View 1: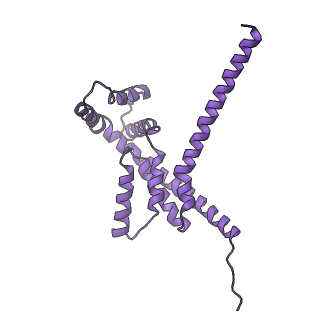
View 2: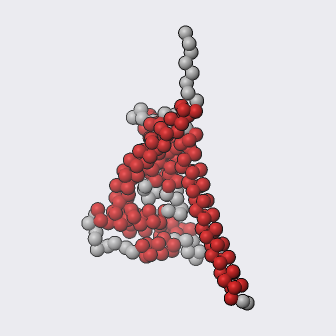
View 3: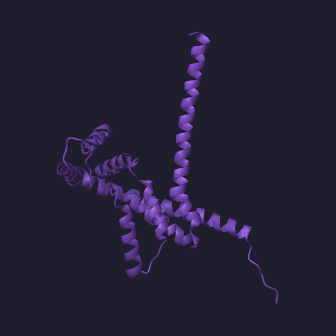
Length: 206
């Protein structure tokens, strides 16, 4: 093969790689818009009501409860309405728990764990990220039975890392909820302003 041909193939591979990365990024942007922004855009409630949904969803998203966060949002909605007369957009709240998912779970859990260890004063027991991920991957070893996997997970979460992750998630939940409320309020208010500009109220002449 000629040198020019080799360069052509190499250039084609680089372009293909760039297109693949660009396609993956565009897919992530579309998925983020679908999961997080579309529920806000579709909300017919006041901006504050919608923003409270983002607050609750983000607060629960910043906890080591991936897999049951939608249930915790729903229970928060029920309890807040019944006992505290405080309401929020449930659909938006459920949607924003997607912020932490199977793809972001391990990095988030590790951040919670390290934050918790620091808050608890355990400076000499900060696990490396690779060992943290490896330990989680062991849970999905195909040679383990369901019971063995469940038992391993219970020991790992409750005994080894559970306290640190629970404590460490608290400041992130507060920060995430506050930032979520600020973002949700600003975004919903901009949407409301655009709608008012597009469809100004009609005044009846007396």
